[in-house]
Length: 597
Ligand code: GLU
Image (cartoon, rainbow, N blue to C red; front, side, top):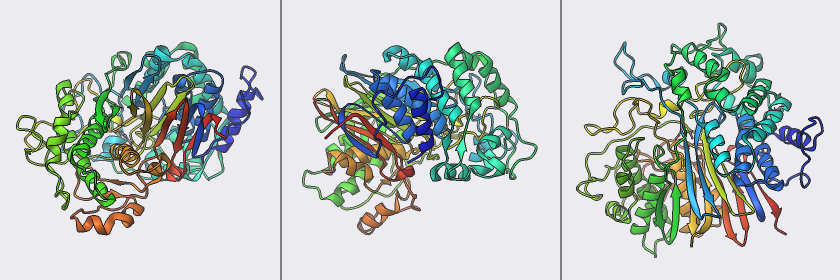
């Protein structure tokens, strides 16, 4: 549980304790735990303050989009390393009145001048080391988060973006309490953060990560939010904030007294005023696939979330016998995931044609790919992608697409009318490129490092190389599942490319392995992303390791934890089960407007 003092501050703010214009809490202090059942709407995020902000909007008659924007704006304050207006994300929306699912692609975009060799050092002809690329002006894409909030609020909301920003600004002024997870995120990034005075001033008091229990206030971010609330998002994309952002990208303000040495030069980037001013969200149709009578809606390209989750489910639908034991189910989940990841690496990027997306999500393709699964023996990884001409069972040479990053944040919201928002947003790494924009209080993304720096597909084309004005491939997988045309499940998670496996695993656990949603969320996680070894949580490794190893699976080093998901299950007549992580990332925050019982 994080940021109790911020929650108190929000309550104070909302009760008008210190801010004259603030409204009163509509129904007393909210009850927020790691899961909640009830009706009237629900909010699940990783953070109590953000969940409380969203819930308050619902209680006051706002809809799911209003609440999602309020929660996201608050996360930009209290979870500043995983999200914020310096980043981007993907927003999936189910409209209960229209019975339709829409999406907003608020992915960061590269400069119009970006070339395929953008991340290749011209002096050496070699790609930059990841951290060299990350902590630079080069890695910063045009942020899409603010434009996403504005587009969502305009298209489907009933409240202004300004009101959400003003409420979150009050949280930034009052401050929030550092917990162990926050301190961990700073500690892991202390070297990068320590290169920049503005970041040091906020997050490295006395040059060290903040102590648990101390309060962080961010008046610069409060002022930034209020400026945007007043002037509109043009302040960000064309006005004073745009100017500051470009100055920092072009000449990163490297500290003359860094807290520690940094191994690389901190390079400038080439974004231009016109790159910022011309940024627009996209609104692609969601990906859709059928799975055991359910319809799965996901995020289309440039995310690989929708295609990879959908394809893996199709493979499982085709390959898994009704009589499968639980071990067989786990084995097949890992195999289906590896096969879908192989296709992701070969075929998915910002410019993938809709025909290819359709093909990869067809039942026919799933059945063809399933032909490679041996129920008694694990495939040797990496497996090859399927051949779009010869068929999914035929395979060109294998190749692996590397991936890094375990940060990001996610939220799930529904309202009394049955609208649903599933929204994943990020800066890429925790703390993005390490730079707080001086005087503005938010961190810049390093999303462009989600491009492959050089080709990963051997002699075949790599769909995820940099290009002019291109958006890097993502793994973000905000997913809404319908049953008989009505919402059944909404789920999403952070975690780099393990986002895909986490979302897949939760759906699979719930639908195929007979778990409740709480069990499906809590269950040990293992990720097979078409790499030599499974990356697993220690509990997954302990539970299944011996039997999976006997089948021929290999394990890479364990990850302490995978993902930090949020989810809601719809149980009919307006009732929901809202579930956050019970333990991962310090435990999340779920609440419903009218708790059951
Ligand atoms: N940048 C990653 C993506 O878009 C997400 C990073 C993370 O979750 O750690 O796929």
